[in-house]
Length: 422
Figure 1 (tube, rainbow, N blue to C red):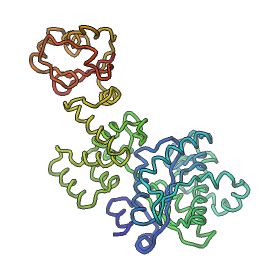
Figure 2 (cartoon, rainbow, N blue to C red):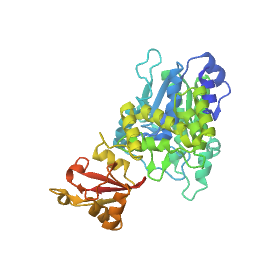
Figure 3 (cartoon, rainbow, N blue to C red):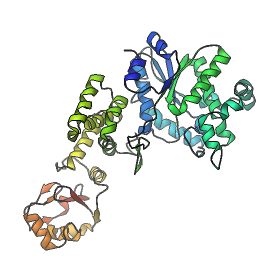
Figure 4 (tube, one colour):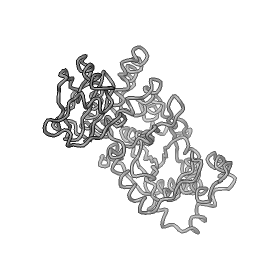
């Protein structure tokens, strides 16, 4: 199986230039994808293009990741309804550093013969003069051609229209492809389907100026079965940076994948083989209640992005929600797990010396309606402290019961949690 066939069975081909399948079957190419440096971290919406480069490298081709330090100063208008906030050079540099470290988890920058490269297009876009650019690049693009682009037409229909800055973006991306073709022998550009027009512009520029054939391939824009843009949650974007989205919440994002989407995501975002994915497809169809496919998806992607140690912690954290012990978890871990449950803050002094009666704590935190109700709950075996069931109605809670001396978790029944913070 060659790279194109691999992309095809995984559903990763939205469009491509006609000659590309034959070329990929016969040659080793250098290919690139551009990444937007508008934030210091990539998010899960960037994972499909990242996996494109990673798969390409595994098939012996050479991947280039362009981190758009130059075009990032402008902002790609594709798929946008309004102009982006323009970033400063300092913001761009800070964001580039974060993205480079994340890409290194997927790409091998020391592979013999086809080592990956990260290149900043500011290296050639910032030095070029406006006169040179207009003369050497601009004259090959008609205004009619640019006005016919979908991204331009959509923006021109809005009240704010489109600035000349954004209007010129397609020319800058075409010039990127030309420079990469000349300096690095790059003959394939890949991206999301909203980049198809920009990719064709670069292919055309290379043909006009160098008389050689270049290629393009775009992958689908990933959405959920509900039509929502992939990677967007009520809490915002799901980031690859653990400081922005914890490994536990990252793991939970994948665990919560809808049955209608999970097989597609296994194809897109894991290294599982076709036969292995078919097995999970059968599991979704025949025993969806097990959620085996979602668990495998979450394990695979979390390990790839955050490593095996963080995956193990994320799995442990998930098990805590189902009654497992807290051993080995820090107060920060506990707070992350129970971030969405009710909480009560209390003075530390109330738990020193003899501490507070559990019945009083349950009533004070409204887990029980009264101390009498708390006693009945304890007697019936419905109360747990840090997932340890308590049977003694006279039990006392002291500071030593708190995780790191800060956090204690009450549970009533199977799923009603309440966090006590001191």
